[in-house]
Image (cartoon, chains in turn orange, blue, brown, green):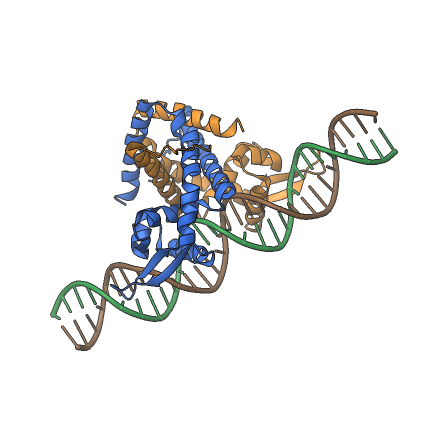
Length: 155
Length: 155
DNA sequence: GAGGTAATGATGACACATCAACAAAGCTGT
DNA sequence: ACAGCTTTGTTGATGTGTCATCATTACCTC
C-alpha cells in the first residue's frame, strides 16, 4: 500500500474508473428519483422492505436484517427509527434474546413494497439489464463476485 | 415503465444486481476508510481536489468544477463551504461573470491531495484493477460507457 | 433598452451514513 | 457465582446528499 513510486492509472484504467464512479452516481440517482416519485420510498426504505417482505410473517430480528442488507448496526437502527415514525415497520421485543429487537413489517409497509416493486424492477431492467448481452452479464457476475470477495474477506 | 405483468429478475439477474449493490457499498466504504485514515480526507473532498489540482493554477469556476465531477450545484456549494471551513479551498470572485464564483485550491489543499493521491490510487488498484484481466477491463469499459450513456442522455 | 427567460450560486430543511460512546444482556473460564 | 469479554442495539454529533426556494446576473427578443 506504500509504494515508493506510485503506479498511476493508465488512460484506459482512468477512463474505466471514472466511468464506474459516474455510473454509480447516476444509477443511484435514477433509482432514488424513480422510487421517490412513484412510491414515496427511498432506496434505504426499499432495501429494508425487501427482506422483511420475504420473511413470510414479516418479522425479522434486527441483527438478521442487518446481515441481510449488509449494514452496520447504527445505520440500521437509525433507518428503522425513521421508518417506524412513518408506520412502515414496528419494533417488538425479541423473545429469544433480551438484548435483541424484532422488526415487524406493518400492513402499510407491505402495501408500500408491493406497490413499489414492479416499477422499481422495471427501472433496474431499463437502466441495467436491457443494455447488456448475455455474455456481458456472465462477465459481470464473475467480476462482481471476485471483487466483492476481495473486499469482504481478508484484512 | 408500467407493465401489466412485471417481469421479475431471474436468479442470475438477481444475483448480479445484489452483487452490484454490495460491491458499490463495500467499495465506497473501503475508499472512505482508507482516505479518512491515511489523509483525513473524505471521498467528496478528494473528488473536488482532483480537478482543482489538475487546473495548473488551481483556480476553477464553480460551474466548471460541477461539470467536471458531475454534481448538482447545491451539492457542490455545500461541499465547497465545508472544505472552505477547513482551509482546503477558498472562494473568489469571478471576473468574467458576476453571478459566478471561482474556487481556488489553497496551498494546504494542494498539499493534502498530493499526500493523499498515491495511497488512494494504490487502493483503487488493490480492490479493483488487480483482480481483473485485460479482457474483463475492456468489457467493463464498454459496458459502463453504454450504461452511462443510457442514464445521462434521453429521458 | 426593456421585459421575459435562463443560468448561476447560496441557503435552510430534511433524509441518509458514519463514528464514538454507551447500556444491557449473553457467554466463558475459573 | 463471579469477573471479564462479546454481542446487540441505541443515541448524539457530524459529515454528506437532495429538494425547494431565493437572489442575482446574463442573455435574448421585441
